Image (cartoon, rainbow, N blue to C red; front, side):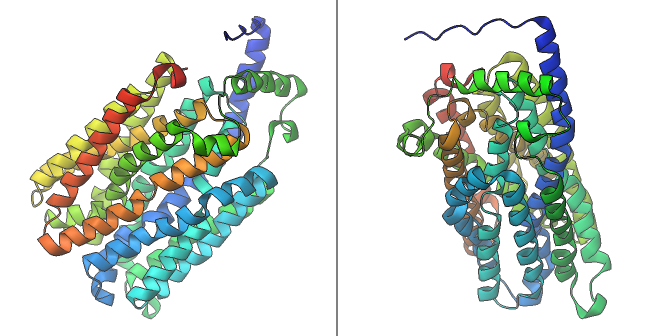
Length: 436
């Protein structure tokens, strides 16, 4: 059955919509970006803490890898119910709850003293944060239609490289200058101080985030109407709108597998980049932190260029698969140059640029055909299954490093998963479903 062509709008209606969406972006996105930076920083700062914590607590790489990854088991178990609750009670209250609770748990990591305590804190942190990222993606679908959402998703996910640009030097400085202050190690101060932004932002979200367009007092009625007309036209294109249909969709399960491969690369950077740099001959935590800025700066520039290209061309699949292949090449270079700084940094720059550019473009795929409660459940399910790679990746890399005494085997494995993800996108995901 053919679809009815949308009624053309007058030029003034388009200009009203453009102005309203622009105002919404300036109002909503800075707060969302700040929240994502705080979230990602609290999730992966354990990679920096490892530089001191492992020696202080006598943790092997296998213990560290398992503990780092257990976050994603708690995350997986509570992701879908958390996002359905957000859909019901609204983003303002639920995202505020998530941020405040994860800040408290992240701070508690400063007092772990055994592998069991480390495992418990990481698992509970995953429960606390479950629903945050898919909730943000769902929130964007309620404010921006597909043709405007690519840049907004990229802007949100620029929090990933920004957290590295900001967090690397800050984490290194905390561990360098605070070690021994108040009888605590630098890694302990790292967990305490870097949890504070999430705590403050949780309060700000509760006070200032608007759940929906119709409740935004800072928009005029003409702007609200223009935005809602675009969103309604976009919603009419969604093929899947129920929870049951989203779980039964073969394409949803395919996207779970694709995201799994990409996330393997993302958390290899987040959890192991400081170790890769240290193994190349850099021992001071502050110097390691400063060097981690370079891959993240490269990734931020690449992400913005790729998202602009995707929105301009209305093409999505190759804008995910090509960066994923670039990331695979970067990890391959790292594996070939474990103890050499310059080629290792080149590999990390390529890996970060590829993986971090692929992630926001990936989220244009499921939001192109999921809507309503189906979007709430489907996005959460894809994210929770895909993020199990955050458990498998660190745990498997830690085990491989412990047994082989080298990162190379693990890095080759990650390069392989990224390559498989890239092939699956272009071979099995129909362009007509997602390119708009």
